[in-house]
Length: 411
Length: 227
Image (cartoon, rainbow over all chains, first blue to last red; front, side, top):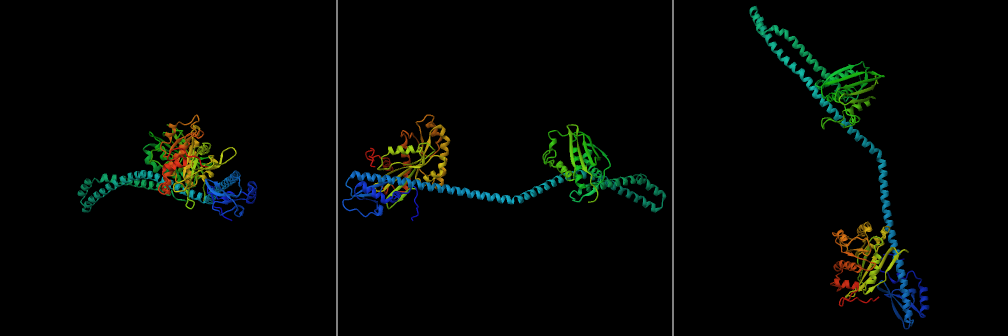
C-alpha cells in the first residue's frame, strides 16, 4: 500500500479524485446512460478505470478538468454529443466531490496531528513541571534546614555586632575611669621620687654627724612637710590602684560574655558591676540610686545578664534630657527575682512603645545604635526563662521590670 | 512556498485571506470569483458548516498561461476566523506566498482585529514564514456599515505599518479587486526574483496582473471567461 504523503493542498490525480467511486458500477452505469461502451482514462493514459481495454470504432475523447487542469478523458463511442457532455459533467461532479472529501480529510488529519502534538507538548511540559515539584518536595526539608542555618548564622552575626557595639561603648567609659586614677598615681609617684631625692640630701649630712649641718639640711629639705605629706600621697595612690583593680574586676563580668557554662552568682553583684562600668556615662547625666534587696544565688549566664543590665542602664542615661535619677531595685516577689530599673527621663511615646523590642527598631540616629539592644536583652531573658516588661509615660519616665525564675543548685 | 513543477511546466501559488471571524473573507472570494476573468477560473470550493461558517477553508483557483507556455495557478484560500480553529488556520497558512488581512471596520471590532492580527503574526512565525518579507495587504471591510472607524482614524492608526491599506465593502464588491491587485503588485517582485517571470517567461508585472484579473493587455478590455 502506498504511503500517503499528500497534503490537503497537493495536486490530485484522477485516481485520487475517483477513489470514492466503485469503478465497475460507474463503468456499467456510464455504458447504460450513453447506450455505448465508455471508459475513463487518466491524462497520461497510465490509469484506466476498471481496466477496460481500449474501445474500437469511432471513439470520442472529452477532457475531464479539475482544478483548472485536464486530469483525464472520457472515451466513448456514443454518437450523441449532448449525452457525452452530460456524462463528462457528472464525472467532473464526482471528481469535485472526491476532491472535497480528500481535502477535508487531509486537513482534518493535519489539524488532529497539530492538536495532538500540541497536547503532547503540553503533557511533556506538565510532566517536567510535576517532576520539578516532586524533586522540590523531596529536597524541601533539606532546603528548609539550609535556610534555617543561614538565618541562624546571620542572627549570630547580628548579635555579635550588637555585643561589639556595647563593648565599644564600654571601652570608652572604662578608658576614662582607668585614666583618672592612673593619672594621679603617676603624678604622686613623680612627687614621691622628688621626696626621696630630698631624703638623700639630708642623709648625707646625717653621715657627717654634725648636728648643726643636719638641722640646716632638714630645714632646707622641709622634711617636716614631706613626712606629713608622704603617707597621704601613698594612701591616695593605693586607693587609686584599688579603683583600677575594682574596675578591672567589674570588667571581668563582661569578659565572659561568650562563656557557655552557667555559674552561680548574686545578681546584685552583676548590677553593681554594670553600674561601675557605666558610671562615667551615668554620673554626668543622672544620680544613681541602688535599692538592692537580698537575692538568692542564681544559676545563669552571668555575663549575658550583665549585658542586659548595662544595656538598660545606658538606655536610661541616654533618656535624660536634664539631670535626673536612675533607680535600681531588686528583690524577690512571688518566688521570682524581680529587678526594676526606672528613670526620670523623657519617656517613650505610645506609638513607639509596642516596637521597642523589634529587631533593628531604633529612634537614635543612623549609625549610633544597632537597634538590637533591647531585642538581645529580651532574648537573653527568654533564654533564662524570664520576662521583661516596660511601662512608660512621656516626660515622666520609664520603668523596665525584669522577672527571673529562681534556679539554683548544681546541674 | 510556491510549488514549481518543472515536468508539468506549472507554478502553483498560495494566497491566503486571513482575519477575525465574520469579517468577510469568504465574501471577498465570492466577489473575486464574479469580478475576475482570467484565462482559467474554477468554482469556489467551500468547506463550511450548516450555518455558513467556514469550517476548514474556502478555495478559489485562478490561472493563466505565460507566453513561455507555463501554467501559473493561484489558489486563493480563506481561513476559519473563529478563535477555536487555530490549528486549521495554521495549516491553511503554511506555505502561503501572500496574505490579505481582512479587518472589520466596525468600532466594536477593534479588539477582535488586533487579536486576529497578532494571531496571524504568531502563526506566520510558527509555520516558518518571514512576516517581514511576506507580501501582505490589509483590507478594512464593511465600509457600508454605520458606526465604523473613519478612514482617517484607520490610516492614522496604521500610519507606521509598511503594508498597503485598502477600504472595502465586500458585500457590494467595492475595494475587493483593488485589494487583490495590491497583493499581486506586492507578490510579483518576489516571484520575478525567484522564477525569473520577466526574463524566462515573458511576463512583466503589468501583464502578470492583467492576466490574473483578466484584462486584455493590448485593448484594456476585459477578457472573456473561457471556463
